[in-house]
Structures are given as C-alpha cells and as structure tokens.
Length: 204
Image 1 (cartoon, rainbow, N blue to C red):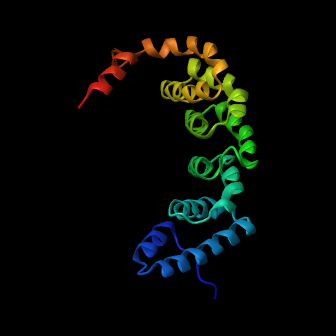
Image 2 (image 1 turned 90 degrees about the vertical axis):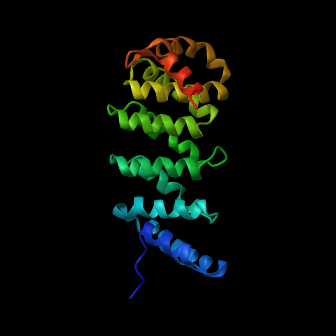
C-alpha cells in the first residue's frame, strides 16, 4: 500500500524532527516525488496543499521549479485560498528569466478587473512584487484605474504597486502623478492619509 502524503503541519514537524541532514534529504526527496506525482495526475482538490508543501521545501533550499505551472493554475482559480497560494507561489518560483512568468499577465489582468476587492488586492500585491517592465506597461491602465476608483484598501495597494511600476517603467511617472494626489489628501478616520503616514514613521 503506497505511503500517504503528509499534510503541511506533519511535514514541518517531521523535517524538524530529522536527526541528520541525510535523514532530512531522504524525507524531502520522498515527499517531493509524491508532490510531483500528484501534479502529473492533475488532482485539483489537493493542488493548493501540495503547492504549499512545495513552497515550504523551496524555502528550505530544495528544488521546486516543477511547481511553476501549478502556480498559474491556482492563480486562475475562483477560490480565494487557492488563488492566494497561487500568487504566493508565483512570487517565490517565477521571475523574469522564465517564460512561464509571461503567462501570468492574463490572470493578473483578469483579477485587476475582477469585481471583488480581494482578487484585486491579491493581483496588485503580486504585480508589485514580481511584475516585469513589459508586464507593468501592459497593466498600467488597470493599476491607475484602481488607484483612482477602487475601494480604499485597494487604492492603497494600487499606489504601492505604482511605486514598483514607476521604478520599472520611468516614462510612466508623469501619468501617475495625478493618481497620487487624491490618496495623499484623502480623509481616513478623520485624518488625511499623509498625516497618518507621517505619524506612523515617527512612532517609537
């Protein structure tokens, strides 16, 4: 009977309990093989938990590149917890050197245009972390729209994303100056945002 895959908490406990580095490597190799097999079998119900385990192994320094396409599948999911794991995986496993990175653009565009603030926020956070110049240029319109018209929490994330955008694509700076003016004077719980920012930087 094949050995059942470990849950993420069990995997963490087992790795921490390993007495030698060789024992840890053996455990990681066995669990990585199970995760790879699950990905090949295309088990959608277990995709998020398997990717979460793979990301933990990646943070320990073990290979996890074979999970890149699974990140894209989860990012396209309508379920919040799956989309969140997908974007986390994309931030950790994808970079501008991989062709897979470009495949993320369409999912980001869909989520930036999503009616739900949680999807917009996840996309903005991901774009502000891993967006390439080409990707940011393609999505600048959506970022600017959310910075002007989104919910307050979304507007703040859009402004943070726009900082990354301007660093990557400096010629768009002038287009985002008007966008920045509104949140800097916006009232939040009776105080303008710029006063709250100044207060937060002087505390402690």
